[in-house]
Image (cartoon, rainbow, N blue to C red; front, side, top):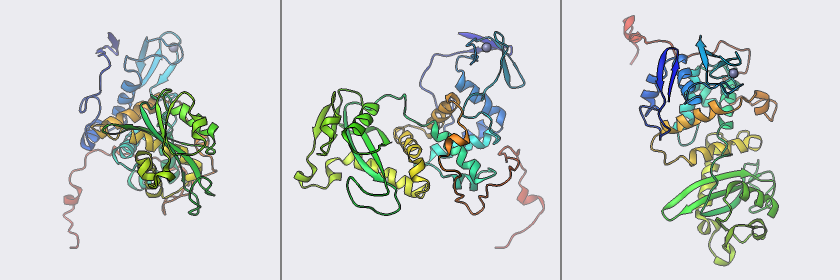
Length: 361
Ligand SMILES: [Zn+2]
C-alpha cells in the first residue's frame, strides 16, 4: 500500500519481525544517535502508533494533512497530535528524557528505581520520575497477552510485610501472590504473577483462569484448595510433605520465580511501597522476565514504547493509591515545578580543553 503524506510517498511493508538497527536501536549508542531531539522521538512514536499511516482516533479516517507536528483529519477536521490520548499525553518532560528512561528500564535485568532516574536524568523532581516509571509500568500489564499453556507450575508466596512473619499460608502483614510458570523440556517458558486475596479455591481458580489456557496441566503442591480450583485443567499434584523434599525441590521453577521477584523488590525498590504498588511491580517483573531471551534489549525498548503509545493516558491520581510517594532521594524534593531539563544540549567541543585549566592529581 502506498500513502502520500506531506508530499512524500511512504511505502508500507507487511508486518514482520522487527530488525535491530532498522526498526529499533541495537544498543545505547544507536539509541542516542537515533533520538537526539524530541522531533526524532515524536516521529518514532508516530511510526509505532500508526504503522499504516495516520488514522483519525475520532472517525477512523486515513485522510489527513499535517501541520506543525499535528495531523488534521480531512473528514472530521479534528486536530490530533501523535501523543494525544496515549501514555505520553500532557507531559512536560522532554521525550528524549523519557526515551532514555525507557531504555534504562528495559536494558537492565533489575529495572530502575525512581530515585535512580532522578539522580541520573535531568528530571525536576523525584515525584516526576516516580510518575514516569509508574505510567510505563501501567503499560506492562500482561492483560490481553497469550495465556500460559502446556505444563505449568503454580504456587503462592507471601511478599513484603514489615516483619518476617510465620512461614506458610497465613503469615501476617504480607501480601499473598500467586505465580505460574511454563515448564518445558529444555527450561522454562513464560510466567505470570498476581496478588490474590487468599489461598481459597475460588481465588486460585480466578488466577488460574485469567492466566492459564484451559486444558493445560497444572502442577501444584498438595494444598487442599487446588482440586476445586482446577476444573477444566489436568492436575499433577505433588505431595511435598510426603516426598520429604523441601518445597523448592518439588516446584523448582515457580520457587525460582518467587526468589527473583523478591530480589527485585528488596533490591531495586528496597521494599518501598510494596503493599500498594505490588501489582505494578509484578507486571514489570513479568514483562521483563517473559522477554529475557529477547536477542536485543532494544527490542524490549521498542515493545514498551509500542505499548505506551497504544495505551490510554493515566493521571497521577490514578497511579497513586497512597497520597504522595515518599521522597527516597536526599535531593528529591517534590517542590515547585521547575523547567524540565533536556538531554538535547547539542555537541560541546571538548570543554575540558577550552580554558586550559588543570585539575589536581
Ligand atoms: Zn476524523
